[in-house]
Image (cartoon, rainbow, N blue to C red; front, side, top):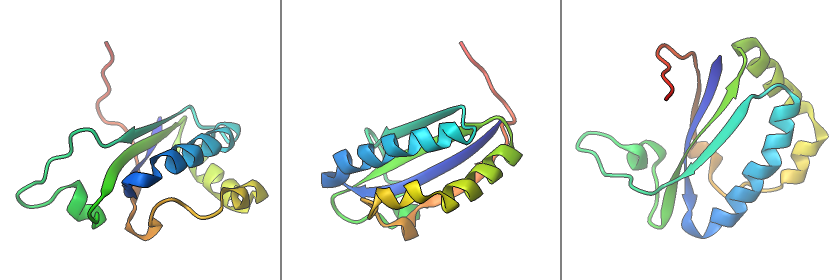
Length: 117
């Protein structure tokens, strides 16, 4: 398993637009091999003493934190999908993003502990 993780700040008024983009993203990701996608909207994000989600994303007043991830079967599939998506003309249909992508934090991760109930 391989996980692409994302943290970003979205203007509170853009929640519906963000959900729309996330829903448009899933069919592409699934077509190119993604196993699942989870998008989480801020419910209880505390300010930290040294750092926190707001500082990390340079969140502005009125912005909400989004924490999301996409699970892939492996890193090779994720990397190939990224290339395919960037070349896919359907990506142009997304238009302007409802957030400032320059402040998005993202990365790829390999699970080291996984537990399920």
